[in-house]
Length: 60
Ligand SMILES: [Zn+2]
Image 1 (cartoon, rainbow, N blue to C red):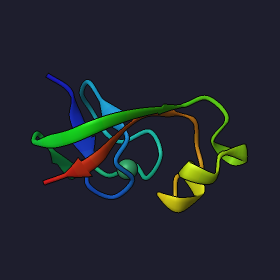
Image 2 (image 1 turned 90 degrees about the horizontal axis):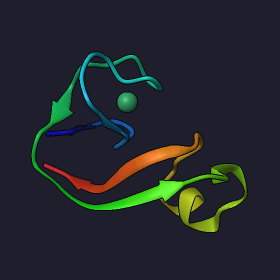
Image 3 (image 1 turned 90 degrees about the vertical axis):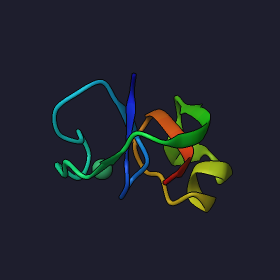
Image 4 (image 1 turned 60 degrees about the horizontal axis):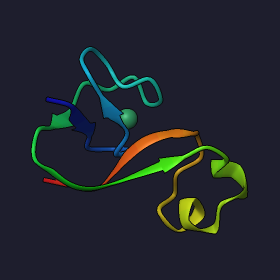
């Protein structure tokens, strides 16, 4: 099962977060959004997401 970074909410299979290099993950997350042009997306801006990828909306 994929885990979500608590800091940037990106979903990862294993290892460290590709964005913040953190390894603080939450296994319990809700919602999912994929950004393919995060820099142009107003939703990404709202969620303070700068890089493209697969994100969870909420991480516990
Ligand atoms: Zn992160």
